[in-house]
Image (cartoon, rainbow, N blue to C red; front, side, top):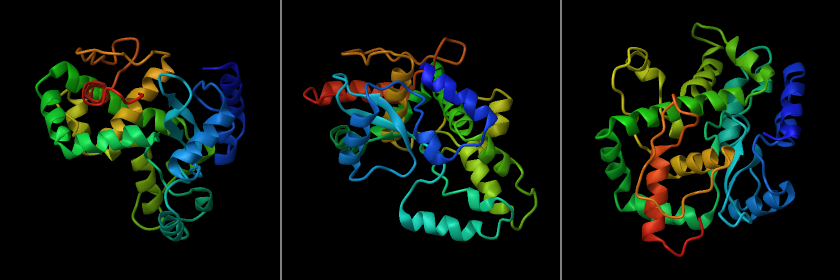
Length: 271
């Protein structure tokens, strides 16, 4: 984390932050914020309203692969309008809560997106799921990644937004919408995987293999992990590390498998 980011975190602990303020202090280092903004806008057609920073760059370092988003205030205008209408009856401070956006890391590179779409079309979601299920180390690493993803997403919220969501009423009625948003942002993993539904298995150390829903989100998470730990993506590898929470850092095993498939099947693709 850069000195500027550390200063921002200290400031954040003292003063509530808005989405716009969060956008000015990336949690990940990037070559330059201005090229990042321009490139992301070109890749997606428009800069997302909850854009925070580029979380992963390609191997040449000149184009974004993934971005980090703020967990509120994203999505289409229709989705935002629907969420606003639902929140109007939620009581005090609910007007400060915007549309939940659980996708913390968003894959933006159109070329990688297209290649992964073809992998999914060829059945690699179920193939990777089967490979993860057969390996206890990989399945544990994937679960750890889901838990880490949920933790980072929740911790990236401003203290003010956390307080509002934590104070949601426990009964039915006006607090239901806020409570649902809190559960999404605090307890869902990658691709919206519902961890609360399996909380008893997780807490009792029963074997639980999270479902693989979307290769795009796993790959965005994997590349962002590498960027965060300042690890260069491997040029070629047949080994899946599957690091667990007991080791210095986590690596998303689904994202790593996808990376190997991209290297094998799309050798001319700049990753």
